[in-house]
Amino acid sequence: MAETAAAVLASAAGGSSDKEHQEQIKSFRDFLLSYNKLSEICFDACVWDLTTRKVKDQEDKCAMNCMEKYLKMNQRVSQRFQEFQVLANENAMAAMQKASP
Image 1 (cartoon, one colour):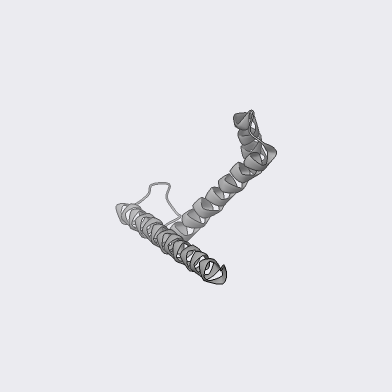
Image 2 (cartoon, rainbow, N blue to C red; image 1 turned 60 degrees about the vertical axis):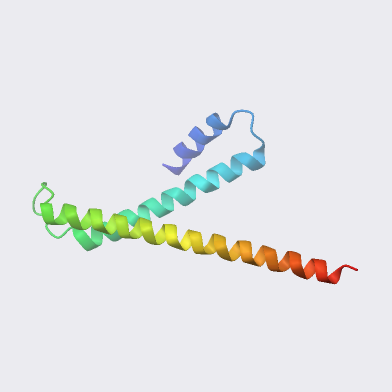
């Protein structure tokens, strides 16, 4: 599947540079890893009865709650990381300004 996704990204990139193309592929891979991890975690936590094809209401509700919690947690971690990066950049700029005469 990753090879197919890479081919789709390659054709969609068109005139983009090789570096941009590689960044798009990396971004798509990261998305797929995150999606697969979410699916695995919520499936393991919420699917109890494999003897029937029908998804029980309880399983469905659990999966939705699991997904929402995972996505909110992921969003919060990303926000905190971004805040940390901004602070680190500001500190680095301040240190550079102090060091220059």
